[in-house]
Each structure stands twice: as structure tokens, then as C-alpha cells.
Image (cartoon, rainbow, N blue to C red):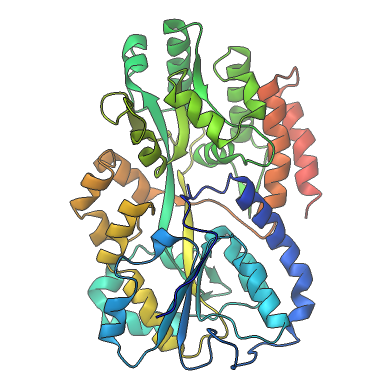
Amino acid sequence: MRRHARGGGRRDSGRMGKAGARRRGMQAGAVLLTLVLGAAACGGDDSEEGGGGDGELLVWSSRDYYVPPDEFQSFEQEYPDINLNWDVQAEDDIIQQLLRMREAGQTMPDIIQDDTFLMDAYYEAGLLAPIDEQMQAFEEEEPELYNSIMPLAWEDTEYDGEHYGMSITANYDLLYFNKAWFEEAGVEPPFETYDDLYDALLQMKQARPDQTPMSIQALAGEGVTMLKSMLNSVGTPFEGATPDLTDPAAHYVIDFFIRAQADELIPSEAVSWGESETRACFIQQNCGLVFDGITTAGDFNEVQGFKYGSEWDTTSLPADSGQGHSGKLVTAPRTWALTVDADDPYESSLVLRYLAETENLIEPLANGSVPMRQTEALDDPRIQEIIPFFDENLKEDYLSAESMPAAPNTGEVEEILEQLWGEIVQGTDASPEELANKYQEQLDALE
């Protein structure tokens, strides 16, 4: 079994709001311009080492920790006639690699994994194979496992009535809070509405006037995950990845942060803060609240004297503004998919089944992966040992969450939203309506 890791096994928060992910989103839009290259070779040269179509299965994982703990050994034992190889491709350029391979007449891997928000671009580029027949066989042959998979895991990559992948894991962003500061301020989570959250931030500021209640990041290129999550959770309409900033729900979100900046509830210097600075403010206990991915808990717990349950805890975002706007919490999933060069779609689909098994979801979670969209695994008691704060309330929120709206132009949309976000964080005299109209015009120009 061959394995080669490109880019190492760095921890991945799973958030689209990172510089690498933003660039990939922009590149995904540009991918569509390369479609003319696709006619050159779809199938490729079977003599290329390690590719699909050559009597073996090649699996590309996007991170080390998404690889099952036994590194596919039990799969090979169950299917000894299947020759399986796997690589880790952690440079966030899988779609670009596949396009280059197709252009060069090389055979692509059989199975790939990538951010679900990029699957639109994969589909438009003609890189994916539909899996509806394989799903039907899965349901007939292993109904118990199949029925444990949440429908959203299949629905995320449904295009023109066909399914093109399985998003079996999804990151979930949380509010991490400083327990002592909350107690001093008399704040009791969870928050039913964003109005309640705002009141809590004011109480925190009153309790510690010289400190900043909420840590945020607003460095250009680092993304706007919290802004987009909040837009979704109050019901802002989206067209693909593009929010309707002129909607009253979006006005509420923009106004929330304009007021927060004016009331010194968020740091104005955050316009130069990336992920590291944002987390550092929380870890150093100079900021009392931060919005971050569920895997970040492991980083926090590695800090001496800053442990879950004593120094910090978590709660979900609300899904209601408190002023008549309500929506859905969102997650950032990753998808396993078959490429058009998959040598044997049925055999390749057996790998998807293997990846969806409980044991192959639980142990990766301990290594840095994200929660699963498989109910048997979610109910496994080991989850509590790995992420003890993932209680029944958080699990219920996770189960009810939808995927973050996405499209091939996700990166371009984020770039414009970053400009809006930066203007708000630095301070502005513009009204929410004025800012919304200004940036909606730029968003509309992308279409």
C-alpha cells in the first residue's frame, strides 16, 4: 500500500474563512475558465503510476486525520482482490491537480476528498461521476449503515437530480466563552437571540471595562466566517454563495456589529488580526468570547492553565435575532467523491461505505477531524471523551444545521464581504442600509 503526504498533516479548522480556503474559492471560479482544456483528455493514460483506470483504487484524502485509523488495512482484508493505494494531498489544490492531469492525458485518482463548497466547481468542470446506482446498492446491501447516514451527507452534492458525493463530516463553529468573566458579568448561556447576546456583551464590558468582550478576526484574506454564519442564522436569503445584504435580516447583522464597534465590544485593531491573534486574545483572557471551529478546543486545552470546564466552555450561536428574523445554523462539510476516471464505480463506492463506518469516524475525530453526519457514530459514548463539551444541546444544534451556502464564486463573494467586514470593524458613520447597498452592488456585479 503506497502512501505519500503532500503538505503534511496540519490541523484544519474546517472553516472557509481562512486565507487558503478563500484563495481556493477564487480559484474554483477560475476553474470554469479552463473547461476548454477538458476536451483534450477525459480518461487519460492508464500507464501513469497511481492513477485510476489501471486496475487499482487510488484515494486522495485532504488531510492526514481524515484517513481511517487502520490506514485502509481492514478494507484490504475484506476485499483482497482490490488493490488500494492512498495519498494525503494537503496543499488545498486537488481540483487544480485534477485539471492539470486531465489536460496532460493522465488518469486521475478514483476517489478524492475536498471542501464541499468546491464541489460545484468540480461538477461544472466535469470531474465527478454520479453515484446514484452505488447509493442504491449501498442501501440494499448495508441498510443499517446506510440509514445511519444523515440525508444532508448526500444532498450537499446533488446536481440536476443526481448525486456526486458523500459529505460524511462537517465542521461546526461554536461560541467559546471565558467562564469566570461570564460569572462576574452575570451572563448565563445559551443565548436565545442575538439581542440577548448583545446584552451579554454589554454586561461583560461593564464587568471588565478595560478588556474586550468579543475577539474577532478581520484581516483581509482570512475570511468572514462569523459574519456569514450570523447572516444565515437570522435568515438572510442567499443565492448560491451570495447573500442579499438589502434584506432586513442582513441589516440587523450589519447594525449589530456597527453598534458593537461603537460600544467597544469588539477590538478595532482586529482589522489586522488573523486566526492566531483572534485566538490569542481569548487564550490570554483579554477577550471573553470567540467564535471558532469545534476542533479549536484541542488547541485551547493544550494551553497550560486554560482547560475546558474550568477556564472556558462553549455554547451555540442563536438562530433568532430577537426582532423577528430567524434562520438556520450552518456547518462547513467535506465531501468524498468519485472522479470520472474511477476504474470501477462499485468498488470505489465500497471505499465510501468503509469511510462511513463508525470506527472510521470516531478515531479520526480524536486526531483532529470534525463531527460526523452518521447517527450511530454521533451517539457513540466515546464522543464525550474526545469532545466532552459536545453535549446533547450542541448535538441537537449540529443535527439541525445546514451546510454553508456555496457556489464556484465563493471566494470572490468572500473578498467583497471582507471589505464590508473591515469597514465595520474599523468604525463607520454609514448606516446599515448604506453599507448594504454599497456592497450589494459589488456582489451583484459578480453575476
